[in-house]
Image (cartoon, rainbow, N blue to C red; front, side):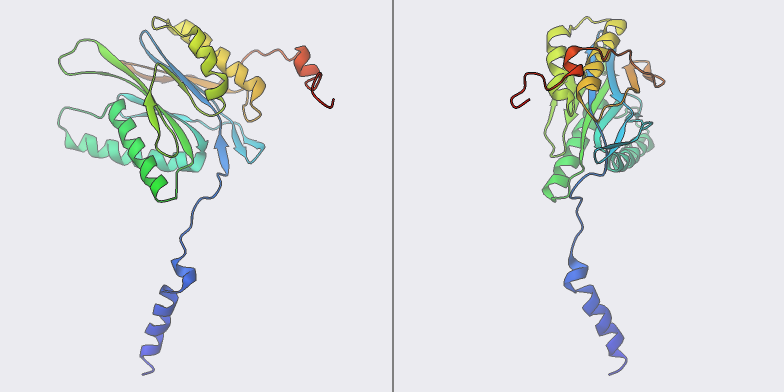
Length: 252
C-alpha cells in the first residue's frame, strides 16, 4: 500500500488545476513598429526601422526585422520580436524540408504567404496568437514563362491576409498608405521607389513615437535579396507644428 502512495501523489500533481492551466501571451513585450513595402518595375522594395520598444521605452536600436526566406522570398515583421524569431524557426524547417525533396522546384512567396496565413489563423483559433503582422515579398519565374512574377502580400496576427501593389503594417497603414496611393506607379524605377519609401519612413519618424531614425531597405529581384546597411534619414524639426504642438487645441 505504501508503494502506491508516490504514484498517487504524482497523479494528483499531474491532474491538479494548477498543472492543467495553459499559459498564453497576454501582451507583447519587445515590439517593432511599421514595415512598408511596394512593387517597382524590377521587383519589390521593403523598408523597416531597427527599433525595438520595451513597452513605451525604445530599448533596442539594432534589431533587424527583414529576412530572406528560401530562394525567392523576403519577410518583414512588426510586432513581438520573440514571436518573429519563432516564426523564422518555422520557416527554416519548411524551407529545409522543401530543399530535401530535391524535385527541381522550390517554395515561392505565394506559398510562404499561404503557409503563414494558416499558422497565424491556427494560433488565433487556439487563443494563443503570434503577436505579429508580416509582409511577404518575392519574385519568382513561373514554369514555361520568361517573365518573372512579383508578389507582395500581408498577413496579420489573426490570419487576415491579402495581396496588393503596396502594403504597410502598424502606423504605416494609416500614415504611409495614403502617400503610396497618391504617388505609387507601376513603372517606378529603383531610385524612385527608394525615395518614396524614405518619404514614408520620414513621416513615420515624425509621427510614430516607436520609430527610430535608423532603417534598412531591402530589394528583392529575380537575382536575389539585397538588404542595405543601416542608415539615417535627413530630418527637419523646425516646423511650427512641432515647436508648439498644442497650439489651437481645445483647452490650451
